[in-house]
Image 1: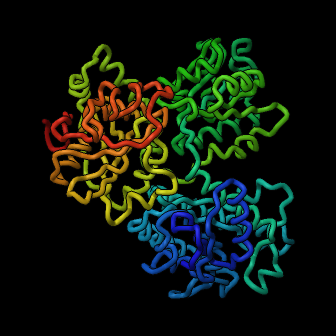
Image 2: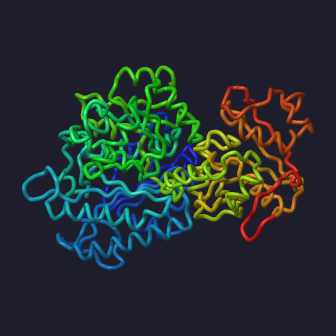
Image 3: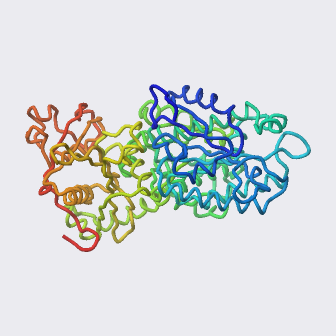
Length: 583
């Protein structure tokens, strides 16, 4: 990487393509500056996209943070022979060759991700325009493009550090966009206009924003005139409108559900009227009642209902997006809960455009935990029923059949580790900033750890992580840790810390912590199991060791704002059943 004072590998975006991308680079730099996320943007050698995935010395391989970008036109592979690099096709028509190269590309991408955790997005770009003009590719080329997008998404869906985007969707968001530049394509293999490269720059900026911004995790959805037309309390289900406008909203929400967003109904209505719509119009709806893991259907202010949903789902209110057609409701929520993202579906606006333009709902990279999150929340309902009346953690875990497995992490775990450290707000040390990830857990002088949780109702997947480093005196620092709040009171962090201490052969852990005003649950845990490094009793919250009042799990601003270190003795950790037996 060339010298760039002020930049590190964490600030680097490397772009590789099957065509010339020089016009894209300054546009992408400018777009990133506009959102306050300046990055060094550099291009890999021309036509060397596959080589970036295969070579251990490639620029992709050297990018330990930031983002790798691969732009590909399958048309550039048509007619190529084995061993060729990327670049202009030797032949105008080679679908079989393109399909073979696509499978090779998927294999190379998976091989790269097995040893590199840097987020990498592949953007499938349209091929050359058809013979009728410059407005778009021919029908066959368009079909081939759609098939390539579908195959890449299917082939890479289970790899959390890889994402696939469709440039056609990014171009379609800009009305009247002139995409193709046939003259530049013929002279320098620059296939698109500056305006089209600008659309690519905006799309890539959204990809980076999705990795850096505070995450939204749940969507609270209105019913009347949002999911369907008309008031279900006044009209029978058969008379409600399910026009393309409302079906487009449902399709968008279903896609977000499949990406891992939690959907909840939030409607000022009679519960029975809403349930009848889902029951009697099931064959006409794009969403079923099962897609929604929680509901607040009553006549209370929606700000109160969102706060109640946040408590039930163990999320902060600022993890929510509200989708509603009523401007007064939207204003009330925005005023009362300013952290909530409010999307007003104005009847005069295209709802698909409003939803697609919401950057807070972007999710390009998905982990296994994302894809099963909604099932996990549904299982939580069964867990609450099975443990009703139990306050003792040990008895609760015994009844649920809790099993926790903690271990050292591998490369394949790094995307989930990064996600937990960057997205967790409550049970977190808050000592790993966005600029530290994903390089921090991948550091050679550090060890990363994960913990998984399962019980008789289902598998939570990886719910906790920690990053450790040896101290000069031989002790062990826990530089950062985080746990999903869905795993609270299940003994997960106890087992994780106990495993770390056991394998590191230390009697105590030195755990860094920075109060944010929202991570009271993590502070309570550290006070319950350890002491500050001055030896003060941290359960009292008094004395020179803490300098703060006790924090609670409510997210009030009574937690410390300075960074401190807690000493957690291994003997203080009471552990739940673990993989391979019980304790």
